Image (cartoon, rainbow, N blue to C red):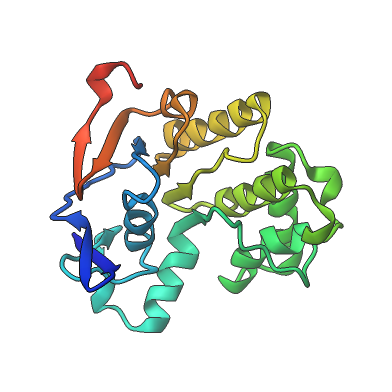
Length: 222
């Protein structure tokens, strides 16, 4: 994968021939300085942004040969994505936010809400199910976004600083959930983080610098 961004009169390279595979059941942590391109790589991997060169693949599907509807269907059914800004819908309750991907994928509302409640229970905010995002703290909103990403049976979890607004105990509980999803359900997970404690849950730790990936797993970061 290759990607650059405007930087004055020139373009700055964020990804320079990055080649990354995350296998089923594997948790990969992506580290690097702010501005190094971690978010760019995650968005390309999730099919949200198109790279200048290269072709992301999910479940054997080459993303950019799909129609817009096919791509949206694949992301909704197979990818759980947690953005730094969480992207919750203010007009929906917390439970409705979490159940929405399932309902859009054809699950009956009652069943979708039941699964949403189980996901909210897992992240410790089931009591907030009927509240709206604006009524939640930043950490609570982050946990709601994580519940939305974990609900259902998605094959790939991509998260950008998933524990950034959480205290240490809650962050550990969230990472235990992600680890269990990988170990017990065979999901693949790619997480961008600045936190060595989060990276410690990973099977591999990769460091993005100057557009290239280096494996730091053997250097004490995992």
